Length: 149
Image (cartoon, rainbow, N blue to C red):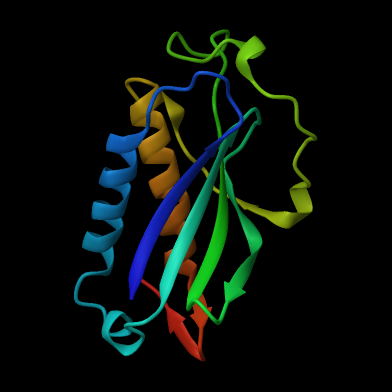
């Protein structure tokens, strides 16, 4: 089994997140290392689409999309990016693309302490990882198996 991450920012001129993407995939791989389900479903990939935008709380969308023909299951993670009024390293509110508010009933929200983060890239990495590992601790169902770390 493989795990992948993809960022989808709703922010104009967001810094390149290549290092964070690589670090996330490495940390997810380390978290699942040695787990039986990795060898049980070698053809499958679990992907995490990370939406970055304006919002209040990080969370994971309650549903997932399964692509049986390509052996993929995709979850959507929402990471709210602070504005420059909330944090010194935040993004100007003018740079956020307009989008409708999230439907609270469709997300499982994750508690995350933004105070521990040193900057935007650190926040994106740690908050995304907290959401993904939170989901994996509660369990992911795939092909009659409960994937849990």
